[in-house]
Amino acid sequence: MTLSNFLNSLARRWHLLLGALTLTASLCLLAYSAVPPTYERAASVLLLPGTQTIPTGGNPYLYLAGLGQASEVLVAAMNASSVRQDIRLDYPSTEVSVARDPASSGPLIAVSVSGPSDAAVTAVLERALTAIPETLSTLQTQAGVSETARIDSLQLTSDPTSMLVRKNQYQAVVIVAAGGIVLSLLGVGFVDGLLLSRQRGQLGSIRA
Image (cartoon, rainbow, N blue to C red):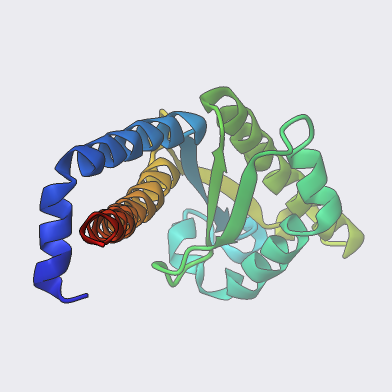
């Protein structure tokens, strides 16, 4: 079938095409409603050197260069399955990311949480921010670090509200719309071909 013949088929069966596209639109609305949106919230935590390494009256932000490895160790500990399970307890549908901030050369740790509800995301982020200083303290206790040499953590930023993300909903709509349109066009062309073949057969029978 040539393109012109296909377009003629659609024009002849425009009512069928309209019905199929209306059904596709309804399915798109259904897909949009069926797929829940995602909520996201983020915060950042900065590691600070122990008082032993800072001169009296010194600025702690000038002594961050040696904390890169410590932040990597802390991130690895935070991503341990036991720690992550405690953080996501009661909220298994959430996802937690704890990693060094790639945009910063300092010991800045980025924490982000995504989930199906604002309440779940808020609770899990609070747990993660609480777990960071606790995990940092545990690591240093195990290593026998003295109080004056201990690295501290400072919550630097935190989103005041969760961000509503509808990416999954839009993807579902696009998939349903693309599939529906393709099936509508091919289906109408197929039906038109069957109907034309039947009409030719009937005409042939009459002439015979």
